[in-house]
Length: 404
Image (tube, rainbow, N blue to C red; front, top):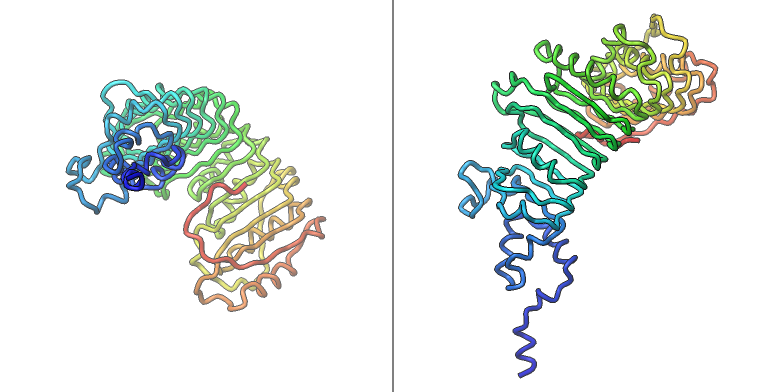
């Protein structure tokens, strides 16, 4: 009789809470809610979890007859979620957020929102109800309205704005940021009409990305950068996408050469064949110690056998403090003009690391040998002891902004 009772006991209820919460975090949210059928003690247990991940991307092509879908392939977040006061980490991806009442996320520390349907007013409402939020990652379609990020607790902020319809491109919107304790800021996607970075005094890392530039978006991007750059001049680490690198290189004639006096580490994603624009951008970082460059376009190849020449009126402070350079590029030799300039002017350069992506191309088969031969013939500055490291990598499809 005793053995029979053991067989019928609710074993799931005896699992440690943190183990159950860890299971919830790893499961699709549809399955998490369905776990309420497994045990009486689990009926509403998922609502007490400190970690929840609503990821609709895995469900878009699944069974849309399950409760929660609104018929338009967007999952409706249960209203009871907004009263989950125990939440510390929450991820909402491809979901429909509809708040009815007050949000009670007083303990929330990390929030990811990647939604098709979310308004600036709703985001503002959420932020006002998360007094301890430290990490906020937002991806959304701008449908109008001014987005205001005001928080004394935020440490990391990432904002990506995109569009689904052509009408979204002409939305006039404003981004206002007042975060005195913010340390890391990433702004990417289509630019806002107006930026107000009112207090980012604690910022140490800034990532600026944008959509591929053309004549239509060039003015918008230039206008955005002219508003953002003055507010982040005090940071120590900067990462720029290809479009932003080009714009900053073109803007150098309008800005003081010492625009970023505190930046020690810089990461550029750019086309190495546009080396003059890269040099123009580098002029604005006189205190640079470390430079990381990733080739954005490695599909052009040329056998560069003639001596390279570069004429420019560079400032006396150009690259005087640069010690380390890391270059990742594909087979092709447009990298040489830039490297020649670095070797010529960076008098304190200690190390250059070349990481060659392996791709099929008509370039010389023994690329690393060819590169080493070219480098040995290049003119160097007083930094004759600079160490050069050549390696091969597999192709990378994603720009990792964590390089520091």
